[in-house]
Image (spheres, helix red, strand yellow):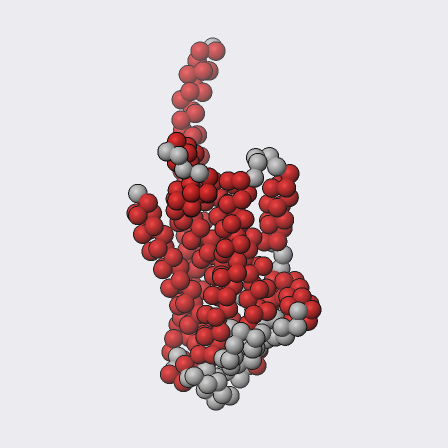
Length: 289
């Protein structure tokens, strides 16, 4: 009797395993299809609503109430992105290098830093905006300026760059380091000549994620960079980004069509940045191989 039961059970197990595999595969395909459909639907809706309203006057050098030009906001977005990356990328990469290559494993200080980085990455952007307003705008006396907004955004994206860089460096095999040490190279040379080039695709991915957050940020910049629709003479001047420009147009309710056009331009810029990042990552990966 027991042998018969065992034979029956062994016959049933493959069928149940197949059913589970089919069910899990169906769940994966359904989840992927829903995600792709949502992304394509959102992007397609914005492009369909926005592209027909894109006119040349939207790219006029000067903003007026008639043309509602997005060109000043586009220039300010580029400036704030570059300034934020210039501040955050070196700090994030060097911090990750210290945590992974120089700090002792199991160090309590490393655990505290990682915990703080994860905590900072989950703080709402409005809190960063209030902090930036109190520190950079008022305490430092920078006022509403691109510099205040750039420093605030640098603090926001610093945990992202740190964590992604740390994961990328941690994925580099130890045999690379051992081979470099065996050839007589020091730790610093090994880090900059072996480890960082091997981890560059992952580092680039973190930088691109940071760029996406900078481009789409509104709450933090309203309290720090301001909402002036102009290209400031220097980094101490106030100016709005594309996301703030879109928010302002939609809130006023008088230029809804141009708000859709601005959203379409913003979507195209984000898609172009992601495509460029994937291209660069592939080139770096091929060069490493």
